[in-house]
Image (cartoon, rainbow, N blue to C red; front, top):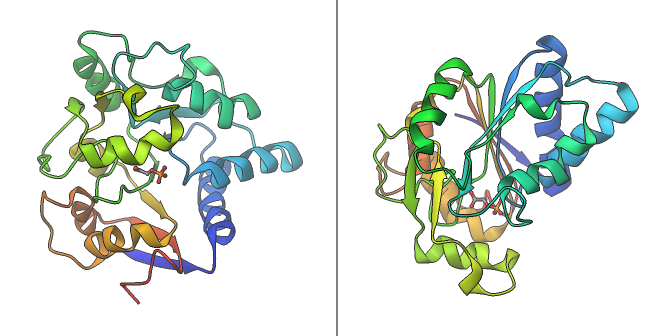
Length: 238
Ligand code: PGA
């Protein structure tokens, strides 16, 4: 795994934007694997800024997202579809019909999404990490062979995500998520991490034992994975 330690969140977002933008310029119909959460917000605003200033076009780009809460309609402002449109897609010329995410209201979403991912292999997949070492909603204990599946969120993830809801009771308890095998299938993985509260997870990601108890540790086996993190998140790996 290549590790890039940046002085702060801003520099982390710049480095990630350089990778994504250069991929889209080189391959205008690239498949981008995208993530929600607070960490990629800086990257997304830099992609929008570059699109407006330099004209990088996303008109033929396809986007596949990692995960979605189960039970939420796409019109809900807590859904990840809503998040992606608000924070990225509406600022680019990407066609919404080329953006894919699990349907929170569907019954059997996993089979459909796996079939889709078979056709849309991510050229670059953006990832965040949870303080418990999860990637997407693959919580500790998830099989490294997993593909898109339904998960019951752990207490720790519900607590982490509750800051984005009015109260912890409103956080959905289940989600659809790409599995670890779908993530490992990406041609390139770029994992972004910021903040001291993620330092232990970063240690597990880079230097820990490869174990299903730390889902992100499987990325040590990926042949093109870049970790871009700030100083605070890198505290235990320096
Ligand atoms: P965050 O979430 O970017 O909001 O910290 C990352 C994650 O839980 O995967």
